[in-house]
Length: 187
Image (cartoon, rainbow, N blue to C red; front, top):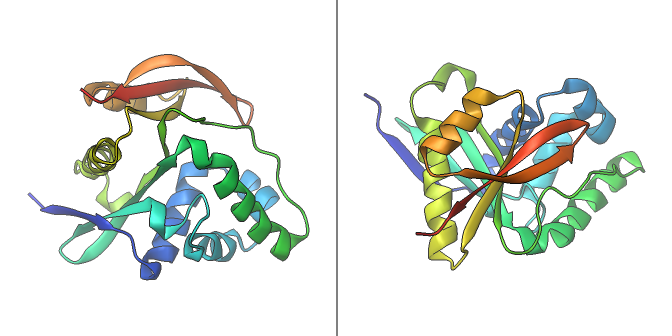
């Protein structure tokens, strides 16, 4: 079995983070609408920013045999608007427009925004390892709750989150999808 190492992201991981965000959004039409035709380049620029939603500062990277294979991105929900403003400024400077995205988190929780594993490395426990690592980091930093949202139609992901201690605490409407809002509490 492969050994999964989790480390803090660095600037050199920006492209992997951009790909992870694109996989997390999962909808190419939405990606083009919000980030333009060359959305990977724009998401890479956002990942390089010190204080954006998808900043390398907010990401942990999974590595197997020296190869980065996945990323998890999370941040204090109280900082959402600050981080989003910086993200929107980068998008605006490139496209001269900014998207309108509903709030997916708020003060009082550390929010897991994105979890993605490169396709050829899926079903190896990497996702759970990354989520566990970012939860441990959030709790060590003093957060009481770690939250995320999962599409009502994604029962497989919901089962995975439940298996590591997340429970439903409500619902959110996000990009026209009904989502379960789930949280894990610091024991």
